[in-house]
Length: 300
Image 1 (cartoon, rainbow, N blue to C red):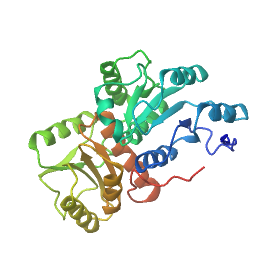
Image 2: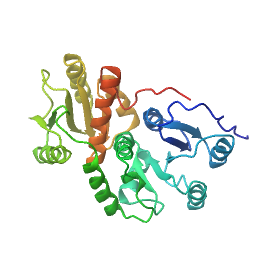
Image 3: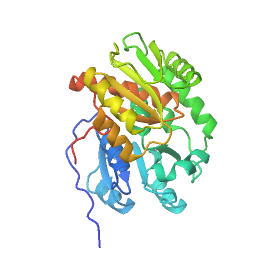
Image 4: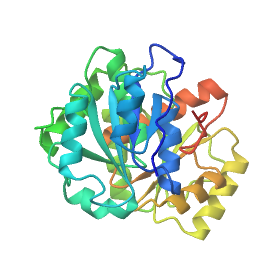
């Protein structure tokens, strides 16, 4: 069966970077992240490179970001990645890893030079990357292919410091069962120029007086979901970010339905955390209320 490449379409926003999504979109995790990044990029979805090349030749834009979706480890062999890099040598190539490849991603990239980003972290990291582009910087996502993981982390920290900071951000309330972890999260928020509004050991209070809540839930269970529903019902408009050790598509969807605004994996990086909070603040301004990781972007 021969696939039909997407047709070129009018630009929605000439200032919005173009992105190409290569690979599958089926499955809760890939659907969630695809919709989230599609809300920020002029995104075209292609099953294979030949489709993307035909789309570009027919009048499509050159992408600034190429996302290699992987529903399982080893989805993209080295020769395919080399071909993609030769096609768009100036584009940033990122692997989008689902939970099936979580262990492999944490132990190091499968293909040298291609950074693999967890599906639940990409929307936040993309938010920071776009903010960096607005300042004229290439950003951490555009680190050289030869950069090591440690160099990418340092570049992300340096880039984050260049993004506009100030006291206009709402304070963040922290909740979680591990005191040492909460102290670490407080340090991350302080490093990002944010204020900690307060800390609650265990589950967050139902009468929480805050706009943003960071709940280190560790492992999301039925009791946590029930409590999340009560917190969200009692505090409409509260932006709730959950930190979970191993987020899955089904558990994330359940959390979003219960009132969470986003779910991010733990341990969390500064870039993913700050980007997620910035994303929620932007969506709150645009929609007058929090919108989750799975907020539907218009399908194209």
